[in-house]
Length: 125
Image (tube, rainbow, N blue to C red; front, side, top):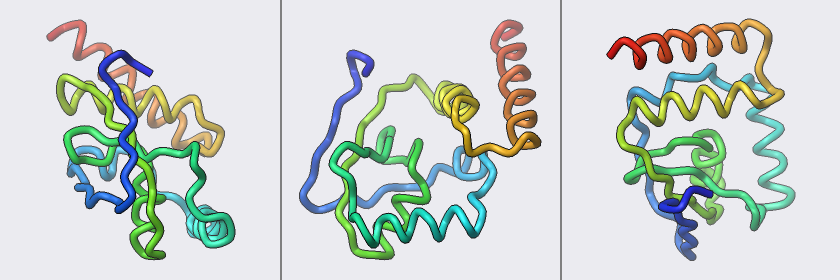
């Protein structure tokens, strides 16, 4: 956890916003993935150690879980992260996703290229 980040626990789950630059940054989950996560939430509810990551009221990570919790009427916990701007969030999201196992080879390659392009732009800019 970074020094400025904070865990925000709420009894009633907050309404969060989808940032247009973040919503389609990653590939959409497959129907199978959506059904598996929904079944898990129905069976187990929200796990106390899980957090939906946010920044200034926007979803950073956990878009599907957020949508499913709202659909199922489940409370959830959030974790407010600190970023300077949306570009910094994009870089974090790409790096975070590249470390996950659920990406296809194609999506992994696409994100790798996007991340490398971002690094080049940051060095020039």
